[in-house]
Length: 107
Image (cartoon, rainbow, N blue to C red; front, side, top):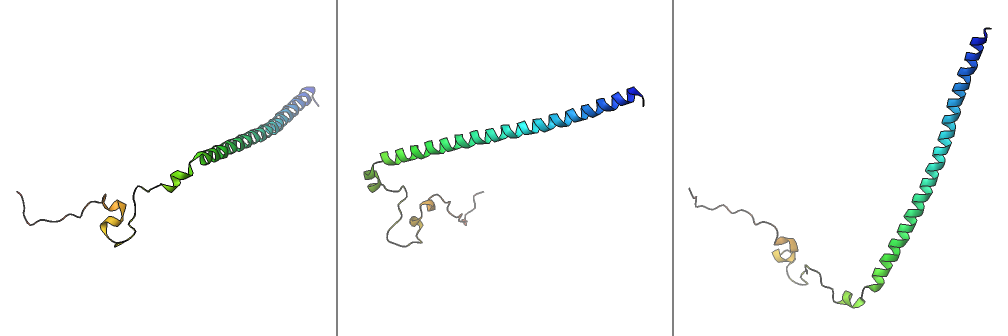
């Protein structure tokens, strides 16, 4: 065999082997980086969740109980009376009245 053909075959084989090994190593490195990022994000989310729980607990503990006893809703519902009356629903006043056709025509 000609030495040029043999050296070309060896060169192409080593080039292909180099490409595949670099791809394999790059993939492994990328997988490790993704795992590290996942761990960081999980730790960050856990820290934020703990901080949020602590803040909620602090706010609930600082809320005076006496305010709960005097709380009145903005739209009180009637305790007695006709439940179908117009005033029993808070949004009834916001609804438009039905159009009444008049017999007089302005023209």
